[in-house]
Image 1: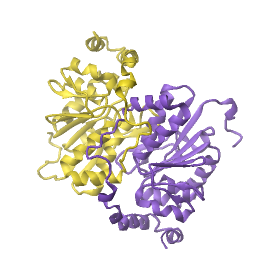
Image 2 (image 1 turned 30 degrees about the vertical axis):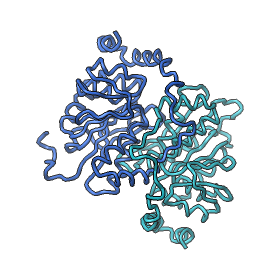
Image 3 (image 1 turned 135 degrees about the vertical axis):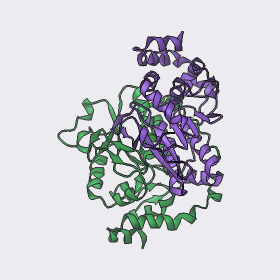
Image 4 (image 1 turned 180 degrees about the vertical axis):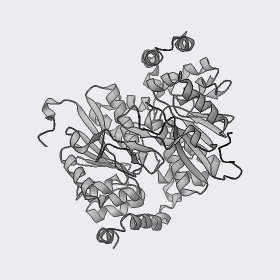
Length: 240
Length: 240
């Protein structure tokens, strides 16, 4: 806690902080952000913020650019800190000491620390998943043990105050679970109604047996090589 | 088609254009955008663009601001034009003649015209749903007949070249359906795998009988009154 942060005991509003950094997958952040923004609209006492290292447009892995609302030193102690993921830019951010330091310091001031998709690899690189069960995008689940975490194949995984979600769209499910715990199941169901989250995947659920996820291992490795080409030590640690 | 647009017969790349305007619900645009961005990453011949009236940061109904990649006159004839929705700002945009003219003109150059959530009300206000079956966010389904459309209670509704999705998260399902039609079911399943869209709503599907959606009618009306306070004629047409 820093001297400039509001004292949580006199600030009853719970802040849910979402981390934004260049190149991320926008659905990773927008899915759970929309869930918590609906909570804040429906129930007093919650607010969402989007926190980045600079308040300026940041590219994503789509043609959309995104602008955060706050910098890391401009937010109160968050109730929850949520870190979204992505592909090459997220993998490269595992070596971004400035971002990792901001994650570490803000996580230390947060009651709940969460991630979506490969956002968990940033928590891991910041040292926050050591000795914990966690999940991530299926393509990179096998990296988690390299950081001392135990990979688990579930939609979301809670271990103590740390919660990690599977790939991309899993952040919506994780956020509804967190809203249910924070504000009760009825409120969570109302949030679900407002975002009309009544999924009907047109080709059904993922058939993990037929999907042949293993065939993408060389592709996953190629992205990792590209992302960490300037950081051979980290690359070796993750792949040797 | 304008003189500056690429000739589709010599431009084999199919452009999927997503409309951005101030105050929208970001999940409405980001859900289907992420689906089509994954298609563009996986299969040659597709590109996504985010089109707005100005290339500048626009607020959303969350603390996140969003920046489009193109203006309306800067995109080629789109294969598909997708219009996202929102609450008060979207309802107010039903009276935004400049935006409606841009939608009308771009829709006339598009093979497929689609919407997510109350984005269908913008298509309707632009005169594009007359005589068609359509859907929208459950809170505003009863406005569709005021524009000559027939409301349908489904996750997404196709009528000719027009496809409309239900509220917010329904855009993901609609986009996967469109990808399946454009590029085949196997490609759509691969996109689904990459965004790990294997939904597990923690409290199950929406129970429409228990949800008591009718209780929100006064709230929906209040938002509409706020949005159209400067446009009493349109308000009267929609509510009398």
